Each structure stands twice: as C-alpha cells, then as structure tokens.
Length: 463
Image 1: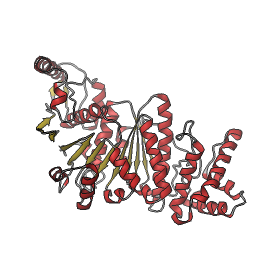
Image 2 (image 1 turned 90 degrees about the vertical axis):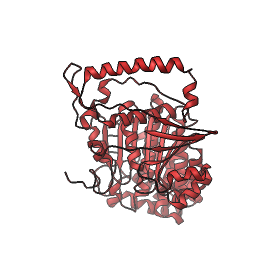
Image 3 (image 1 turned 180 degrees about the horizontal axis):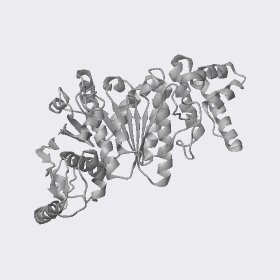
Image 4 (image 1 turned 90 degrees about the horizontal axis):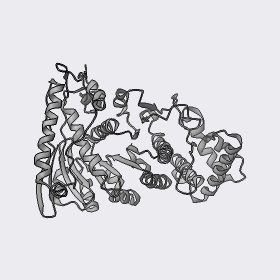
C-alpha cells in the first residue's frame, strides 16, 4: 500500500514495503524475519531518534514490526487455500500477498486510529467505488488481529458470504426478513441503556419507528403518551420478569383515554401483526457471537428503514454491555443515510452515535448518497466532527459539498474524481492523504468480498 502526501509545505511518499515468498520453507521464513529484524534494529533505530519517524510519515506514526503468533493467521491461510504445517524443515507455508495487505491495514487502522480525538469513521463513495470492499478488508483485519466485537448492519446481504466463511464458532448471520424465522425484539433494553434516562431514550426510538409508517402523523404532542406507556410496560416487567414487546406496548396504548394513543396503536399495528411483525416478539436468535451481521436485505423497501433503526438499537444494547465489560466494539452501518429522512429517526440515530463514541466503540457509517446526507445539518455535523473519513470516487455534486465541508483543495479533489475502484482520499485528523489499494483477484478471499458483476460469490461468478 502506497501513500503520497503534501502537508505543511512538505511533500513525500510513504510506502509499506511488503516481502512475499510463495512456498517458502517455514524455518527459512523464520530465519529471514530474524535477519530483517536485525537490519531494522541496526539501521532504523540507530539512525533515527524516537520522534523522527513521526515527523517523516504523513499520519504521524510508523510501526516497525508486529509479532503475531502463527495461529493468528491460520484461518486466513486455510481460507486462501494454503497449508498450515508445523514449524519443521521441509514443511511449507503458502502465504499469499493478501496477508501482507492486511498487515498494511493494521498499520493504518490500529496504529493511527489511537492517536485521533475520536474513532468515528465515515466511508463514502459512489456505487462500484469499493466501499463495501474496503469495509470487508477492515472487518477481516479486526477479526484476526483483535479480540474486539464486530457488529454489522447489512441492508443488501453483501457481507453474508464473508461472515459465513469466518465460521459459526466466532461469527453468525442473523437474517431479518418479512415472514422470516429470525426475530429481534425492538423493546429489548439492557441495564445502562441510553444517556441518562433509558425510558426517554427508548421512547425516542419508538417514535422513530412509528415515524417510518406515517411521517406526517407523528408529532411532539405524541411523545408524552409514548413516554407514559413505555414507562408503564417496563415497570410491569420489573414485577412480572417478562420482557415487553411492541405487542405489549400497543396493548398499553389501547388502554389510554386519548384518541392520539389509539392512533399510535393503529400505526404500530403494521409492526405487530402479519408478515411485518419481525420486531414485535421476543428475540429468538443468539446475539452473543463475537461477530454478528444483521442481514436485512429481504425486509423490503417498506420495512428496511425501520430495520436499520432496530438494528442500531440492538447495537446500542450490545455496546452498553461490552462497555461495562471493558470490551471494545466495532460497528459497520451501511446505507445509514436513510435514517435522516425523518426528524425523530435522525434524532434517535444522532443520540445513538454520541453514545457509541462515549462507550469505547468505533462506529463506521457507510453511504453512497453523500449529497442527500449533507442536506441534513445533524449528519453534516457528524461527518465534519469525525476524525477518520475514507472518500472513494465521488459524484460531481458530492465532491463540491465535501470540498466545502472538509476544506479539500482542488488538487486533492482530483484523487476522488474518476478514481479507480479502491483509490481515493483519507481524512486523518487534519491531514488529507491520497491512497491506492490494489487487491489480488486470484484468491478465495477476493471472491468472498467482491460485489463486482461477474466476479466472486456476490457477483455471480461461475466456478
């Protein structure tokens, strides 16, 4: 991976040099690594002070060497069709270039993200620019190099082949579909949920769900009714130890004297009966896997925005639980711009995003609809406040708005104008860094993560 940079009157070229040997005996590889380490120790540490690398590299940090146990790369080696044998003379370890690309990603993400004011990330680009490919590479790295939890909201089912390949022991795909078997209770709420008052925050979520059904029929005057009924069903839970559901909430609304409460109950009926009741009953799937992908591809256009909101709420529960355990969580939310179509949905997501940042979580928002996103003041603020933004090829109208929001020069904009897939511009803190990411196509991993027509599992490639 190569990075060109111009910053503060300086220009240069930063490269991650990768050495690649096919079918190299493992004992020779160990010897070679030791030799390289001695060379680095001799020439790098003696000729550089501790802060010189920080001044030389565009992102302010360089990692000379990482020690990874062989077991850490075993799943990837097998996934790529290689062999993983014991460290004995005569035994070969086939390590394709992919492993080294993941190590380069390790340097960029793990090494650099820790220095940022916040770890919020945006991944932007037109269809075909490589957004999901970039996200999947990051997911693979996080799965292999960390013990962090990874939660994905997948509106198009693009991540399913990769997550399934990781294996059931560590990863699971939950398919949320109209009339499907997998169900997520929209009323699930763990201890510590929300900023200050969990009932108020859950009521905000319920308002955002109802707003998806009837945007014009829900207003601030309904909020007190939702607050009252939400508080009532959770107080009943404390007595009965039975988790409330949307069905429970609808029944409570029907008990209220106001006509507005009955109108809300009527709106909720869409979510509590028939084939669209996937969020109205108790959760019946295991949500404890370290890596979870919520596949909402089959929800349909009517329910997909509500599905994204419900998955975001489920993420908030998981983040809260992990935060108490001292465990970091990574979130990937694709097509997240749809939540900004309505007022209450935008408010709920904005609140959730703030909580993600406070609770040891690295959220990544992914979208192709940048112009639509920037029409929202809240979303624009989220983007401008995020320290790490990956911009791939952009449409002309999107480039104009991004240049104004992020202070991108005309010269720098050329890197996201008619750019090849996988190429673009990174905003790292106050720095803007062009990048090129080329990935070998003759690997099983490429087939799992590409969505290009005619290539890979998602692209319909014939075997």
